[in-house]
Image (cartoon, rainbow, N blue to C red; front, side, top):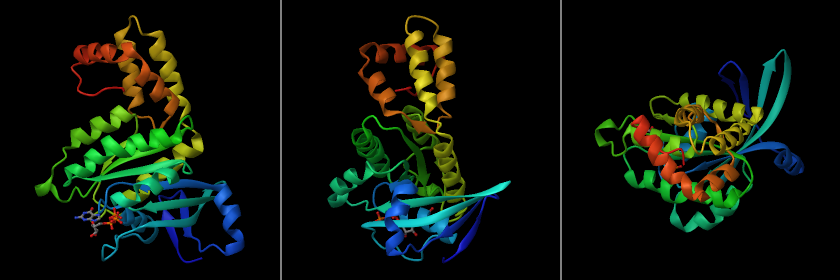
Length: 267
Ligand SMILES: Nc1nc2c(ncn2[C@@H]2O[C@H](COP(=O)(O)OP(=O)(O)OP(=O)(O)O)[C@@H](O)[C@H]2O)c(=O)[nH]1
């Protein structure tokens, strides 16, 4: 055991150097999370803030790294959860390997940097699609993170652009600065792990049914559904694909937007 970090009064994170004979068992029984994003958006920094409480001094390019640790929860009685965080390379040449690795993970921290518009576009045009294609009909959990908000003067991606994209995906959104507020990594991590433990992906299934029922009338109930959807912590890809394939859906979405003077899509 290397270190113990107090975690939001709920968890202690114990970074755990696994022995070779433990590897398979921990792999099989852990919550598997993955950091995704273009190079230098702060993926390794996120992991360091979580485990060491600060960003690293230097930027070292990551290829693929996995970190294992335990969460100890004290809610009357102690329970222990194994977690694996997979750090990934942002560089183009590693993308096909990363695509394959996505399949083996339960939750994703999707990062971009607010001073790098291309990193935001990569989330939109590549990363999200890779997750949908790779996970197929498996449920997964994700959160969108706009990092480096301390670089306000160089900002290229507005807060609303980030929020709207997260709404479109139906996942939570956070703008953070790991540099000035390393604790934010733990808050976001906590949210994602709790969602996985509670299996909140049930929610979109309800919405899918609700939208189908409301397809001919009742715009207000759809907009209520959308505001609920903003707080969803996970995605059921079946739901996304089915709504994407619904030809009438885009037309319906335009009507809802007009009605609510809204600039984001449900999907
Ligand atoms: N200004 C600022 N710099 C940051 C912040 N977070 C990380 N950085 C810096 O951004 C650089 C890249 O951070 P990394 O965490 O290595 O980025 P990465 O996404 O893991 O990069 P790759 O491994 O190349 O894919 C480092 O120099 C960090 O110190 C932040 O919130 N604000």
